[in-house]
Length: 267
Image 1 (tube, rainbow, N blue to C red):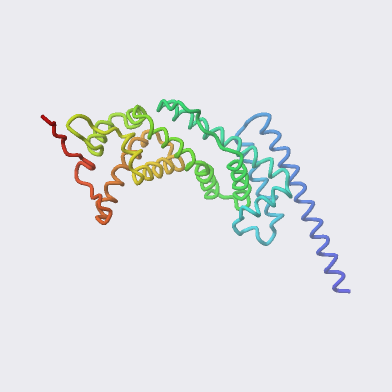
Image 2 (cartoon, rainbow, N blue to C red):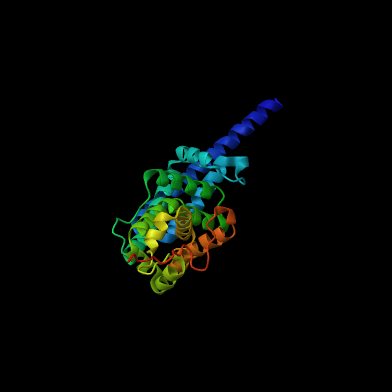
């Protein structure tokens, strides 16, 4: 008798929980539809709050624990409205990042098309959004923005670094007033010419690695255009410091790194 009562209580609780989840799903559909029609940011914020409540009901005892990417994908399969929210949020985030990339490419004069996310990055971004909804607070929102910006940062940095290896004019624009000083301090010189920074990066794997790392960090964390020249210059300084601290490389850098002896002229 007692077992039957407990069983019925569990069934009632499950039905009640299912009903609550359906109410949240309906509310999420209404909110997302409103955002689609108006584009009002507060409605998207409200959609995240409603989604978090629905996810809390679905996760049950795991509600306070971090949500893995695999679990986030599973929840999107169970809650189509969550997948809808993730798609909307990812679309907006990609538009914002692409607009920044367009501004950077235009400012530098890069001739290749500005980058966007590819489909694998969009899929990862949707899972990150769903995962953030599972434990929604101020820190998770900040972390999500950082995670989304970092998704393609390394790939976009590689694209930009390739352009910097091929075009000296990009260095002149990117470094601005710093360009003459950076070239004078770090590029090799002969009596007749000073090496270009694009040549230096193309011929020095360690420097190329540091340039890529600095660009990726800037794309993931900053997008502060006033800091862009300093990030690039720091890659040269970092390379010199590392070489000076590792004499076993056989490439200890003096004050003027890679300076070549003057050529003699046969008479």
